[in-house]
Image 1 (cartoon, rainbow, N blue to C red):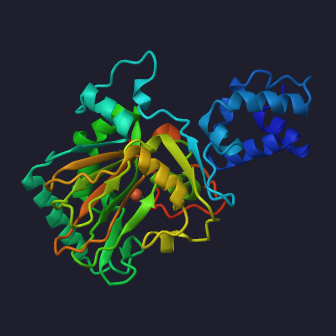
Image 2 (image 1 turned 30 degrees about the vertical axis):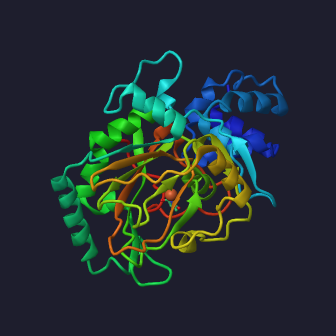
Image 3 (image 1 turned 60 degrees about the horizontal axis):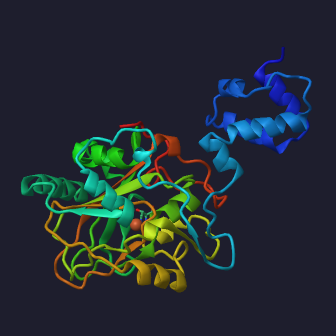
Amino acid sequence: MKTVCTRLRLHLKHRNPVYRGIAALIRTGRLQKRSLNSVPGWRNTAWNTATLGFIVQRTLQRSLMMTAMISDMYPSRTGESATMTVRQDPVLWSRQAGTAEPEGPLSADKLDQFDQQGFLFLPAVFSTNEVHELLLELARLGEQPDLRASPECIIEPRSQAVRSIFNVHRRSQVFARLVADARLSAAAAQILGSPLYVHQSRVNFKPGFHGEEFYWHSDFETWHVEDGMPRMRAISFSLLLTANNQFNGPLMVVPGSHRQFVACVGRTPAEHFRQSLRKQEYGVPDDESLTTLITTGGIEAPCGPAGSLLIFDCNLMHGSAGNLSPWPRSNVFIVFNHVDNRLVDPFCGLPPRPDYIATRNEGAL
Ligand code: 6CS
Ligand code: FE
């Protein structure tokens, strides 16, 4: 009886694309060799390559990684025209048939609301003292001499003001504690199921007068195309570190837009992140799709005191205007992703973005 490896080599000789794909998955550590043994007929030498290839493909298609390799469920930046298609994934992953209502900080009503609207705004979840501690920590990070020169620090396109600092949960113990806080992590698990890991963390400063806009976008569109996030099974938490009001550029969301996927026009340029994190030009929705989404769902700009929490689905259409007021609008963003939805090769075909923007080796919480 042939071993998995010998059999694989045999099929590779026939240049069967399915086997070449499987070999690549094994090489990059994304598929365990032993999982091939669960494929019926794997060891049946009577079958020819084509038949076996078909069976292996059909069986492994059920596994997420294989699905991602074979088909892109949300193609974007591939064609000349923009399209809007219905989301193919659940929003409340934890509420699948036959499973118990997930317990945690969010009530069943809140979960329903999240399901329908794609976001939740929870005022004053963190106390003034807790926010103060986070702001002190930010000031400490801001004083680190190497910070401005680091690629994790993003500078505004027109002024020299700091726009964002990425990777704060790995830079600082205080932010590491924040990502594990049950008000975030347990709420995320109520929506996505568990185990989860942190896909991205960052602070957006949006300083008074100099903080610039974030144009309308779906985070998932970028994470899918540029990072290889296969499915819509991630969620963002924005903790307000300063009060957000109508003047300092609060986040605007389009309720219900998380149920449509807007495929964008244009091909992703190499190293797009160097530009996009300052001002995004690819992965931007077209006017017609945006108009449809906003005509249907409207726009909301949840405002509230420091310590409030905005929770939003990875595919919710959102953006924010520049800060014309003297008051900074500083928020910390933490993104959780389910371990079954770990990143594969980016769907744009380019090398992945750096780990400080999209983690690939982060342990589960
Ligand atoms: O490119 C990204 O991953 C980031 N950019 C934006 C505008 N929002 C989400 C994410 O943090
Ligand atoms: Fe965003």
